[in-house]
Amino acid sequence: MPLSLHAQGAASSSAAVTSPMTLRQAFERAWAQQPEGAAAFARRDAAAARKAAAQRWTADAPSLEASARTDRLTRSSGAREYEAGVALPLWLPGERSRSRAVADAELATVDSRVAAAQWRVAGQVREAWWTLQLARLDASLAEARRASAAALAADVGRRAAAGDLSRADQHQADAALASAQAELSLAQAAVAQAQAALQGWGALPAAGDAVPGERSPDVPVNAETAVTHPALAELSDRVRLAQQQRGLAAVQRRANPELTLLTTRERGGAGERYGQTVTFGLRLPLGQSSESGIRAATAQADLIEAEQLLVMEQQRIAADIAAQSARLTAARAAQEATARRASLTRDTRAFYDKSFRLGETDLPTRLRVELDAFEAERQNARARIAVDQAISSLRQALGLLPE
Image 1 (cartoon, rainbow, N blue to C red):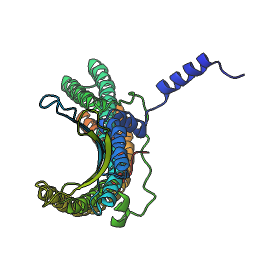
Image 2: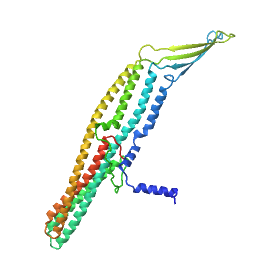
Image 3: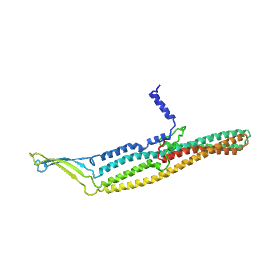
Image 4: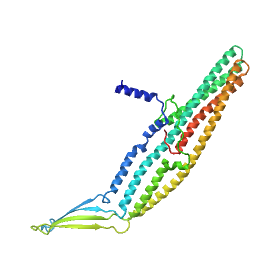
């Protein structure tokens, strides 16, 4: 039986609360608040308006001209003249096609600029996300250590009261518990700080959320993979836009000519019939515009800067891809090693725990084994997250958004 609208809304709301937040969802929440995304529609509208302007038949909107002449304030003989017409700004040779090319380049730049902004936001969210996951892991392990130290201190207290252990042993166990409690407090403070950093992006997974990692990239990891990288696409579009602006500045060396069409209706005196004439005029500016040199120099400077930035970013991204690939390889090797160590220390802790309960091992040895086992578990857990974090960093270096 289908759910009612109210029941469907309640079910979807409950699912939104109980389902774990993914890195992709955290990124989407963060991007929804970014000014680049909010302004993207207005920037596209502006670029589309420029393209529409470049497709007109005239370089600018026509202007209306009107005038009237009379001798009423002088001879008052009835002489009258009325003139009306339009002035049409004309394109310079090549200006219209180059203006269209600039408008097309601006439209492409808007889209690549948004994509690059998304990629940069993704990098910052990824960093905050994995910092929080590591902080929560450390807090969880610190709580487990505190619980283990509390159980051991209680056991030592009972045996000291029974005379099986000395007060010095009890003090050592209590000191180990105090150390675990202090480490737990520091870990909880780190969690609060990491939560505040991620919450600043508008996203905060619940404390019980799972940590689904990103899958490894399906593309070959090399420098050629970064051809479609958002940062490189943005700079490539900037280069093309600067090239088109330089070409437009090259043809805009003088003001636009104007074609004028006038009609005149006049009479020489009172009682005479009005006569009508039509006038065609062409206004051709002489010499270069005072701002043409400025526009050309600015366009050339923008082109040089964009080309140099593109080369530098290509080198940086290629190096970053190689570094993140090596980081992932090392993280996977470290995870295997820490897993072996954690397994061995768990077995060792079980041996010494039984030996201590039987009175065959002293407390300092038992505390040392416990601390060693805890450190091995912590390294193993952090190594697992380090692999997921390295995959995420590699995807960021390749220009891929969170999935």
